[in-house]
Amino acid sequence: MVLPFTFFYRTLAMTSAVSRRWRPRSLLQLVLLAFLMVMLPLAVLMFQAGQALSELSRLADVSARQAVEETRRARTLGALALELERSARQYAVVEQESLLDIYDERLAEFRRLLARQRELLPDDPDVAALSEQLDELAELPDLPVEQLKERLSAFLPFAQHTEAMRQATNRRIDERLDDIRARAESVQTRLWWQTAALVSASLLLMLLFTRLIIRPIRQLERHILGIGSGSQQQSTAPVQGPAELVRLDERLDWLSSRLDELEEQKQQFLRHMSHELKTPLASVREGSALLTDGVAGELTQHQREILELIDASGSELQHLIEQLLDYNLLQHNRRLELERLDLATVAKEVLAKHRLALQQKEMRVECFDGPVSWRIDRIATGRILDNLISNAVAYGEDGGELEIRARTTPSSLVLEVANSGESIPDEDREHLFEAFYQGRIRRKGALKGSGIGLSVAADCARLQQGTLELVEDRLSVCFRLTLPVMDDDETETLPALTGTDARNG
Image (cartoon, rainbow, N blue to C red):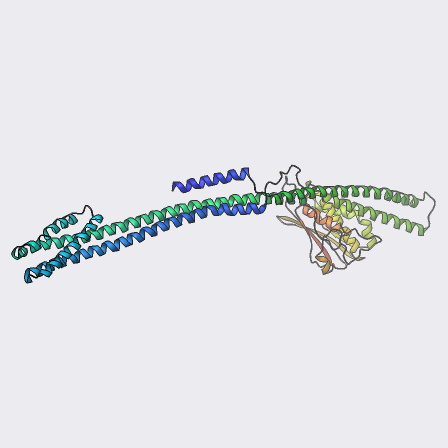
């Protein structure tokens, strides 16, 4: 049992040393090496088991042949003893010389077989006694008939010793079979220990090579997740393993740097675009305000209506620009700033921003009364309400209804914004909250929507570990925001933007 464990520890140490000093250059080499190293202990086990079985088989075959031969010889000696006695007694009766010849032949055969039997039972007293009696029985043919008859009584102890020798032979055969059985049990026990040790070695080698294969794959997975989440560390350790995986890691590094370059270009574009758009837009709105104030002279009613249209369109364009900037901000892992607020106050502040638009559409507004206290991020929650109300104004029917409801449970806050109007088509619902998606229903007004309003709202909900979904309601459209309870010291980072939006305003 010591040898298998010694072999096991030596194999493990040698494998560890090899894995530290030499690494396969390809994944195929690593897999083939793993297969060979795992099969090596099993091959040793099969070889040792074959050797042990061959030894037991040979030993059993030799023992069986010897047992048959020795048993047959012992029986032959018993039969010869009876024939010797029979021939001697027949000669004493009929005095026929041919019987003495048969006697001599049987005696010589008995002596030869007894000599071979002595090799099996060298220290047996019955074999020694039979040798002495053979010398005495050999003298019988030379004696007169009267003396021969007197000496016939010597055959009785001769037969007894022959039977005792036969029984001793059987006992010796039984002892030999017991030795073979004990040896077989010893070999079986040794094989069990060797099996346990070598199979354990194979399992450990499997775990070792599995780790050598899985470790670089997991490093690649973390690398990919880091690229996808945008939180990749620059000091990530390089992949150590097969050449194919190392090259893949290098390609991922190149892809990461390329994505960083594209992201920087996108940020630069958005910064420039916001500046380039806001500057002339501010001039347009300032000019329209000056004209409205009569700086350039009195205006006719028709001219005032045109200026009001210009001012409203400029305000809408500014809102779209701010939505686009909000969308870009949420893509870069903005952290929460939680505080306990009255949600009714937040909702009414947002409603106040849309007061003129609601009055223009003559929509009836019902908003829940406070206080409804909950730990929320003011900016994120305000963006959700602002986009949902803006959507209701843009797509709701003139003279319709807008309801803002809120309720709390021990584990969550539920906020609903519902409006009457045309329902969202089923084919658009599966694209709900997808950024820049424009559904079949067109928004009402001079400007077309940007397609990111609901996407921003959904991302703000996910930022607070909540959900935003479209639900069935007595009004045509109802969006439900569900926010869970968040601990005082809890802050979360928003993952990369994904999602669908059927009617992003």
